[in-house]
Image (tube, rainbow, N blue to C red; front, side, top):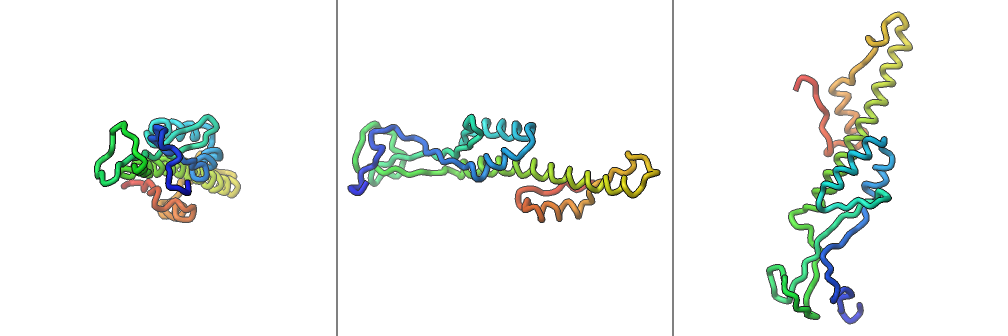
Length: 166
């Protein structure tokens, strides 16, 4: 407050949880059910993220309590008005967990996008060649096109394409 008193001084505050629905939950909701279940399972297995029932995701940051002039973590039960509280993402663990989940969501988004593109290419070949068996009309996306799709969709940096023969 205005006097410099910490609102949670008597509370055993150990973690600050922040909703990251703008980065994860809204994108998860657009995924097919089986993909969404895969992402939910990944979130449940990560220590620094918490999945709520409404698929909202919370990023969990540990709170460190320190006495004045103390360089190490204060594990004592003594409560002092001069103790400071710091929110820390030790070794970027929370950020790393968020990155893993976003990377998995991006993978599923790209997979779904490439399926639609492949189907469109296949349909165009079926429409053109009526005398060719349908199985022969399947078209794989060429490796340079995979790279361009990843860049165009904004997935560069998160994913690298699987190059055939590499």
